[in-house]
Structures are given as structure tokens and as C-alpha cells.
Image 1 (cartoon, each protein chain N blue to C red):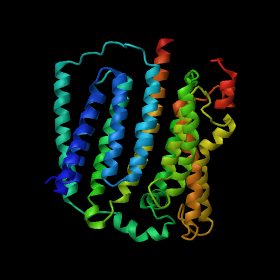
Image 2: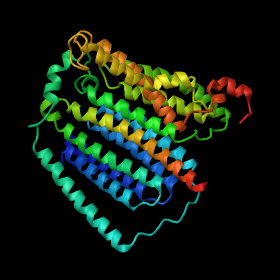
Image 3: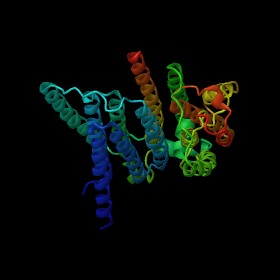
Image 4: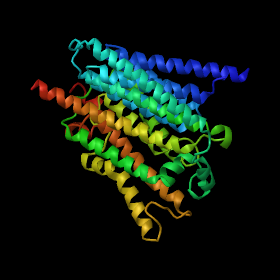
Amino acid sequence: MLSAEIIYGLTGVGLFTLGLRATLLQASLLARILAINVCGAGVFLMFVSIAYQGLAQMQVPDPVPHALVLTGIVVAVSATALALALGRRLRESKDE
Amino acid sequence: MNALLWMLLDLLLAAMLLGLGWAAVATRDLKRGVALFIAFGLLLALAWARLRAPDLALAEAAIGAGIAGALLLAALRSEPQGGQPAAVPSRVFLLTLNLFSVLLAVTVAWALLSALAMGDSVRLAQPVTEHLSQSGVSNPVTAVLLNFRAYDTLLELAVILSAVLGVLALGPARPGYRLPGPVLYGLIRWLVPLLIVTGGYLLWVGAHAPGGAFQAGATLAAAAVLLRLGGVDGAGLPAAVVSRWLLAAGLLAFLAVGLLVTAFGYGFVQYPPDLAAGLILVIESAATLSIAVALALAYIGGWPSRRAQSGSLHTHTTEGGTH
């Protein structure tokens, strides 16, 4: 029987790889930013799967990876905002 | 039987995540990709809930799917329509890339499975549970974020601040939106106060249940996004001087508290146990406002024009048709 941490952990591996592949393959900047976000979501999923494993022994999932991923989600969205602003500026300077 | 049902749910959710993730990055149509990405974020929030990480589920729904989706949608608006035909990658490049992806996936999967096989031999949950009573809060995730690993959160606030300063430095705000129709207008009038109350609740409840500064800040930022979509160019932000202070408030409060405790013989951001609850609440309240202003400014894409800043939804509507 497949345990939840293995199912979600491997899903994370899949998302990480397909996100990274699309980041390298896509031509449009926006599509690349979107792909790197999918890639990051894969990493978060791996982290939380490892945290979930603690449930069996400790009765609670490990809170440290949860805190790290929470930090990661917020940092990812700030980085996305900065990347999108840079992209906009880049296009404007090309148009001029 | 029950375990089998859980496994079926897990497999279904995993398949949908992979399918949506793939579809979001593989499509040529960016609008479609962004819509799929938002759906992906919502399903991911479901996966966090399933993996017993309710703090993450809240953050993902509000930030990962909500704010990030709004940012991408707003960026899409200024993207040239139709776009240039995508360059077709050469066969050699494609082959190398696919080979590299498969190799990488196998390596990472092997590393993950070995980490899972190590079991509970290296786990920080034990010390966190033991010292939770001294942290001033009873939600272990908040305890880690604001007390045990306070350095991480302090630097995270600095990262958010620098990212937003970068956005602000890159030029003027995107043009605002037209006034909404009566239905959207009515919805916004109901939702914005509700979101503000929800934000306050999430901030308060974070001490002992899922919630906290990040979720609360994102909820407040969602109210700002809604206001902007409703034609309020300033998105309900206070005047620029006040907004600047609010933007830095989280980091400043964190640093001030961290340095203040050193005067009483404690380490940097090492709170005295009796005062920890109060100090964490002070930091979290300031951080909530900072995160809300930061995300709102990131969505606007710069400082909103001065004329719009004082306008509330109501006065704007009575001014009418100036847009």
C-alpha cells in the first residue's frame, strides 16, 4: 500500500521537474515565471511530505518544514511580483 | 477499507495536481495557463489540508492561488495579444532537455525516498513540542516562525520589503480599472469589510490555531486588490507617507523588539517567556500591515497616482465617469 507521503512526495518530484523543464523551454517571460512557480510548488510538496511522516510517531506533523514552506510561499510571491515588474519594464524599454 | 479510500483520494489528487501543473506550463495560450495555474493553486491548498498543514492551506489559498493569480492576470493584461510565434526549439535541445529532466526526476525521487526511509531519526518536532509552553503561543507553526526560528521570519520580511522596493523602483503603476457594474460594486461593498474582519481574526487566532501574520496580511491585500478592480486606483491604501511607514513597520517592529530584549540580558529575538505572547502579537500585528501594504503595492505595480489615493469607493462612484 502506498503511503500518503510517498504519493505526494513523488508528485512533488514530478511538478519540480516539469516546472523546471518548462522554465527552460518556454519562450515567453510570463510563461517562464508561471513555470518556475509550479517548480517551486513541487519543492514545497516534497518538504511537507517529509513533515507528514512525523505524524505516525509524534501525533503531529513536523512544524519546522511547515514554517519553512510558509516562508517560501510568501517569498515566492514577492519574487514573482518583482520578476513581473522587471518583465514589464523590459518590454517597455524595448518598445521605446 | 478506510485506508484504501484515503489512498484513492491521494492518488486522484496527485494525478489532478500533476495534470493541472502540466497543462498550465505546456499550453501556448497564456490566459489559459494562468487560469489553470490558479486552479492548480487551489488544489494544492487541498493537498496541504490533506497533509495536515492547515496553516499552509490558508496561505496557499490566499497567497499562492489568490495574490499570485491576481499578479499574473494583471501582467497578462499588458502582455501583447496574440504574441510572437514561439521559437521552435531544435531537436537536439529538446532531446537533451528531456533526458536531463528524466535523470533529474530519478535522482530527486531517489533522494526523497531515501530521506523518507530514514524515518524519524532526524526530526525537530520533538524539541518544538517540548518547548512549546515557553514560546508564548500554542500553535507550533507560529511558535517556529515567530520564536524558535525568528531569524528566518525577520529576514523574510526584509526580502519582501526589498522585492517591493524593487517593484516600486521599476516605474509607475499600471493604469487602473474602470468603474464596475452594479453587481460587482455591490459584491465589493460586502466583501471588503468582511475581508478586513477575517484578516483581524486570522491574526488573532494564529497564536493558538492555524492562521497568523502571513494569512492575515494576504487577506487584507485581497481586499486592496478587490478595491482596485472596483475602480479605486489607490486600492484603499493610506497616503504615500503613511504607506511607506506601514511598509517598513513589520521589519522595524521586529528589529526593535529583537534589540530591546538584548538590553535585558537576553539574546537577539530571544523573548522573556512571560512577555513572549505580547511581544509576538506586537510583531505579528506590524508584520500583517507590512505584508498587506507590500502585496497591495506589488499588485498595483508602483505608487498609485496621487489624485486617486484619497478616494474611497463611495466618493469615487459619486464623482462618476471621470475614468
